[in-house]
Image: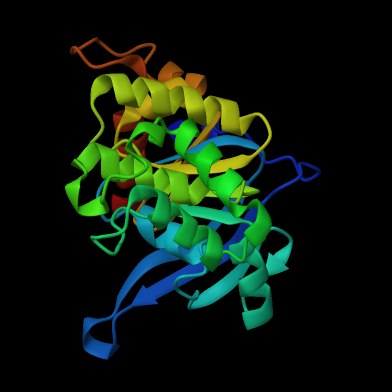
Length: 271
């Protein structure tokens, strides 16, 4: 089968920043309840790890669980060596975590610098080092020239970069990015991919995206989610190899491999 043939097995000795085992998440109540994650297993180590999957596959829900925003319905979750069950452990995790959700709130009159400094405070970053950390985060995402601009006046792409700055301000051990290139122009996407590659040299980075080219250029590993499960896991090059005997229809090799892996999983579920 496609998923089994090319998947790269986990190394049990590999250091990991996050691990989930048999993770199940049910959202809603009673009649409207929906199972979003279904017995999911995943390990995240140093490097840039991409999450691919169609809308509704469970990518954002997994991110929210790892960010300690929502609790699991069943299963086990460990982040930075701590369980997310206890409030004191969740607080410790948040100090060392960076999280960029798909959408985030902000005070419209905050300047970009104030916005990032506020998140440094929320993460209990030492006050005497906070100004330097804020400046460094802004420079990393090319937002230093806009530090005094009010958040309400930013374009969509600039808002995204300001959000990335707050995720980086505490120099996180685990960085969770949900659709980080949304709203960025092509040049900005290229710059962000380079930033991700640099971060992945020493940090565990998990990137949820629907843009396959982001995975191809920035990620060292990719997991494909569908129906709340990991249905394929391995290196981007291995995903591209799935298309080696398929006719070209104008799509890239990794896009074709992605489509084939999804079709294989759906065919197995239909049997």
